[in-house]
Length: 288
Figure 1: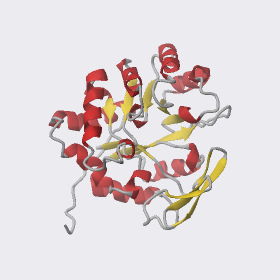
Figure 2: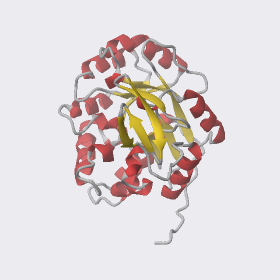
Figure 3: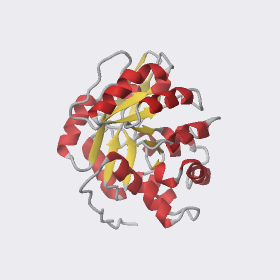
């Protein structure tokens, strides 16, 4: 299994709506003036470290992962480079694109763009960025604005960068109107969809997230199961569920075939991100 969307930081130093985001202890963060449970309380030192991630991945039998980024956490390029050195076979990392700034390509596997949070929502202006990443042979991980607001602009970029691999995040913001238009972008050869945050988007329904499974099936009918990848959005989603639960609701579903589960939970991500030498994880029985 491969987790296509999660986060890491040694120190959270981000911003939301121009206000700071930083840890205040026991997994809580000051989120632009409000205290939020940003991560599980066992991260009492506010450090969302790679060592803790690997322990959780081992527990859930997740072999590989893709570390993406978010403005609310601050730029974590330096820490992610350290994490990748420690676990080079298990981790792919994204640098963070920040508006009108240079972005890192050396040593990273891809570039993360939080398009829905850009001051300028016209994604067609990102063409130089897309072409630079394409020339470097890296991928782009992109979270779009809700619904179809940026879909037309993405079509423009995809047409002009036919060899660029693009992963659209948050399952197209599936609980918002027009999300299917984002999913349809994956009809293009090199565009895939990852489901980071799916349990967050269906949080009010909660485990085992039957409507989330239905959304996976609807997306399958739009672009094919071979274009969909599982993501957990760790650690924020782990404030109410465990990491294994983020996998189990897929594994236990009777609406998906075993072949579809294997494709969604790992095979598609291995192909898209180019993982090699991943081990088959051994399940360790717990005390329950």
